[in-house]
Length: 476
Image 1 (tube, rainbow, N blue to C red):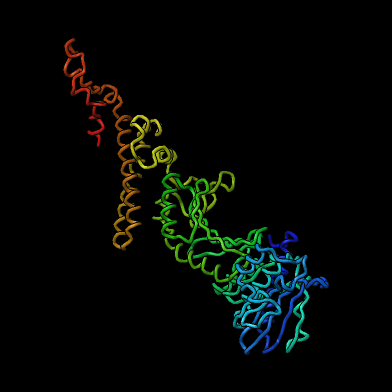
Image 2 (image 1 turned 90 degrees about the horizontal axis):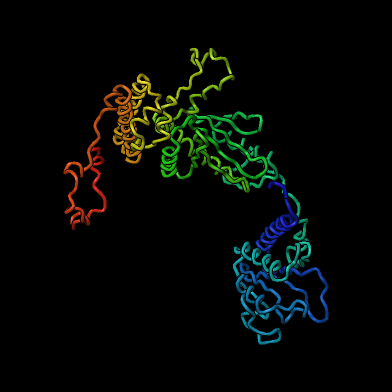
């Protein structure tokens, strides 16, 4: 969600802001400057409340120390598990007692780092305060500043919301966390305008509408979640869902950054860009990917899926407009679907690969035993076969073996469908011949009835699990 949905999220944001301000303070310290962070509760005669302290020495090194059991009041005593966790966070164990012989270590948990590692020390400090002593909020931490930075405001309001950046002056690599959908939409629109060099069209929902090549592209901002989706409708009227799914998988391999989805008879493509935080460069990269991809969405691409391009317009639905309404080129449109004939589409659905799973009689039945219709379908399938074969040769000439293999697969499928239609035409045009064709006799009939002496199974017969299918072999 864009808004802070819970108290925990508000606390996390406050700690993040405190960590950044602490890192800035440590980076600004000068030689012999000291910073002590104490829990705001009062110390007792039994010991101290937890603390973390820093000292800059030798002009470039920070000594950071965390209170050990030698200093802590009994109620804050560190269990062995907590001491182990401090070591996991990066702190070194105490090397001596407070009154012991001085050494290079410390009676507290400690760490020496160059000042340039201030960000790491700040992260370790926040983790220590939150995990080891369960400090609920940065407001419970009391800073004591000694040295050149006295008077600095480290304990300023940690829930202050930073002002939203001006989208027009935003760098492409700057990460921004938008506070609401409107701010994210403004960032998206500004990024697209800056990348393309013109002001894009904005629809009623506030989403960006544009064209890459001749392909419609929508940049959609989610109404509730910090998410931006670059969405491109590619095809409609796709036939043969199984074959289309295989083709979509092939596209995913060739364009791994783009997600291709089948929605009923439509093929869409999309790329999701995170809006938390939003980085303009990520959206520009997504548009660049589609700029490289969309030129390939041509007539050959549509034929591969047996569909029509969205860029060429949607088929009109019955009742939407009069059937005599003029098309974009000024001609009359009779409202017919420019896709494949319904009976041929049915065949492709029932036998997507043209594998011959339908008999000639079944194919004839799907075609309504209409001779003229079958002749039309034969013409269409032959044209498709030739078109795909030519596309395969073109792809090979361009060195695209994957595309050539896909086109060959389509060409063979159309060729098999063509043969199925020819068989159906024979059934329709020569019904008597099909009905009187003699059936192939069984092998036992060729040799007459078995005698009583031959009723027992021979060794040769025992080794045969089932008779060979000569009809299948002949067909192959």
